[in-house]
Image (cartoon, rainbow, N blue to C red; front, side, top):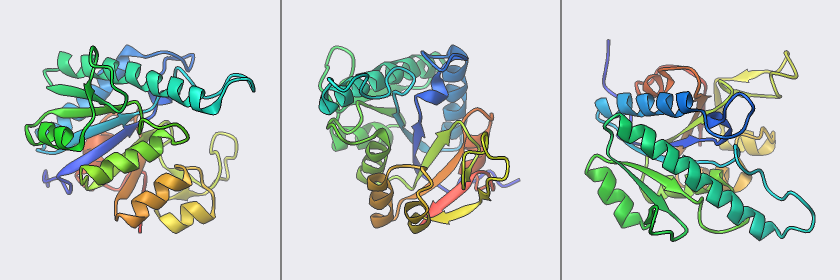
Length: 237
């Protein structure tokens, strides 16, 4: 069996919802431990791993019309920091050296993000978790993932979600939804498939960063993706 990975440096995008417990809220310790094992397996293949984590298990945007959009977005960024710290604890429990880099300065709990610092940590074999999105409101963590992937020159974005691939419709609501193995960025923009927002998709397209969508809950999927096995959906230019 070929054990040679097809990527050297990857950015793993983990949604906040994927880390949630059975109620859809908070953090499931079993899931953070599972992500840690997936990352440990990736490192064993010699792959450098960076992570962008969402915050949807804590915060999903404005709770009232009286709340300013920018304020709501900053609150969402803080939610991603909580998830990043939880992942760091799970990783280090597995002996994985990890650094959390936050786009919003909070030096007591995380390093402040700079591209050079991130790349230096990756070169040293550490896992880097990017927290607080892009640091600016009106941009999603999908856009933050695309931005960071371009900055660190990642080979691919591994988009780990609750579903196992990209479909033409919600497969839980529509059993006849078409499952896609390969898509182009033009496809997801024109068909409005909801894989990621248009800003993130355009950024990846313009900088030749492919996206591999697959289910996080299925153990071993990160390793399979790194070894080039056909799982989930590949999005390419």
